[in-house]
Length: 424
Image 1 (spheres, rainbow, N blue to C red):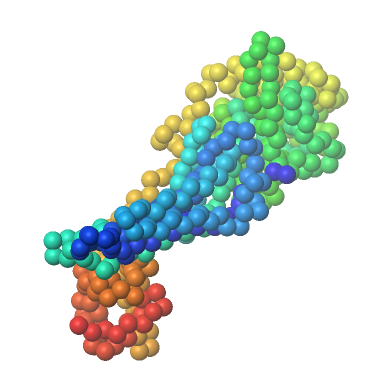
Image 2 (cartoon, helix red, strand yellow):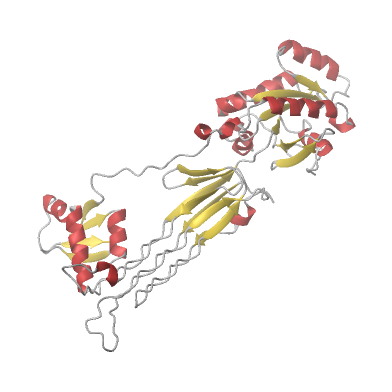
């Protein structure tokens, strides 16, 4: 089964909790704090495996969840880091964060990898809070929550030559005759519902990868039929081999057929439209083929045309030799220059305020990622931790902003669904 697009939730592991502990040994008075830090939570990492050709392994993983880091212990023992989760994906996989619609990574290259969700850092133990003013702190942190993301994972197949054209023009037959692939072939439209890859080897030992891509129809650039699925994979090819039925076996007009596909390609992407193109005149064994070819050449005098009959194995050697010649002339993977990769650095801009405050009925609701992270890492059963939380809020400007908005002492303030009283 071929799978080229899935949606998945990834949840990195929470950091281990820091420990509140004091050294207690015989003959050692005032041993001091010795609570260790928690370990880091597991990150979720996608890594390229060139042996994979589909996202089928991810299809049944609705959620990928990382393990929690180990808690810190007394005697300054730090908790162990959780092992990262490595998910293997095919080359050409693009990862998009659905919350922001930003591309996290475009994975090209053996063993290329990206962290799609970072594990939370371990909480600090009370030994880390020791200072000149407080030699015996009774405070430690809970582990930081791991990142959570909803991802769209897409596969754009990588091939040297992509066979394009209307349904049933002979693309699958060509791939079957010249490669090790075994595509499904039948006499009805849309036999090919998923892309097929084939390894083509010439007599001079040169080789290349050919992809038989699902047939296009009008409206494909708007997603009609197999539209976007086909065009996404076409973007990854170095050369487009446009297969045209010159025999008009189904009453087609080869010129109209060619123009239809070109129109859809140009509407979808100018970059795709500018790729090197070869015209493959197929079904030249049929009666009307030669006459149609002459008309086609008059209409498109500058096009490079190769005449074949795939079903009869005529012209295939010349076709393959021409393809390897064109591939070698094309710059080495021009789509994969750094500036053209479908990757974006996701910059985190500092907001003027790392929180928002809204009034809901008789309560003030305070929200913000940094604030929520601070809340989740605070031990509210430790008095000093609560005081530190309050100081941090004040330092962020929450107290000042509440007063500006008209909050009075004694009002209810809600953070992460927990209610607090607004007071000095």
